[in-house]
Image (cartoon, rainbow, N blue to C red; front, top):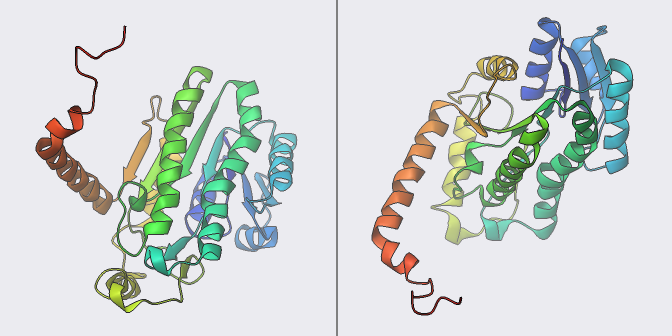
Amino acid sequence: MKVWFITGASRGLGALVARKALEQGDAVVATARDPKAVTDRFGEHPNLLAVALDVTDEAQANAAAEAAVNRFGRIDVLLNNAGFGLMGAVEEATAAEVETVYRTNVFGLLTVTRAVLPHMRRARSGRILNISSIGGYRGAAGFGVYSSTKFAVEGLSEALHDELAPLSIHVTVVEPGYFRTDFLDASSLSVSPTIIADYAETAGRVRAVAAELSHNQPGDPNRLAEVLVAFVDAPHPPVRLPLGSDTVAAIEDKHRRDSAILDEWRAVSASTDFGADQVRR
């Protein structure tokens, strides 16, 4: 039996993973701002602990991790799932909007991870899954601020992967594409109310496309949850796990474009090194 600690477990992907983990006999510490939303969804279950957690509250995160260990003895899998989107051009976003999305998507993930890691280090065992996005690998108009938070998650995950590997704690950043969840709904996606006409053909177009795409996304969230529950048994998990054909296509496209940049600008890029006769000895 594995013990899962899942943030944002009352709905969406977090709830789907929690349900599948419970169905296979695992224990789940399901956290949410309102733990009643968890029990309303799952009912009473001997392997379920619903815990109140605002991921931006350090004291609450430490208390939730302690509650998990007190109840089940350990934490085997941390799924950092809590987060939300912000749509709009970078210039359209207010300072308050930027701060809010960073507080949850980046600082919240850091807060929960730091709360759980002492328990995993003592056990010299654990899996950490950090939910990023297709937008964490490549930025796009209309999602610049949101993408920047997921770029931060990618960098943190890569560093944690290297820091924790010698301790037998595996870290993977998960990069879903567009899955048919409520991500594009108002419950998960904040839309900047400021609209600047000059961005009508870029960020403005994305607003219209997102409205049409909501609940018509190509990805199956149930299959995504199944993959993640099975993935924690992988003996040698990769540092990143792209999920969805759209994410695969986006990564391949970025690789092609970056290769073209290197081909065109390689000489300039390399020209900034000291010359052989200028290297200090």
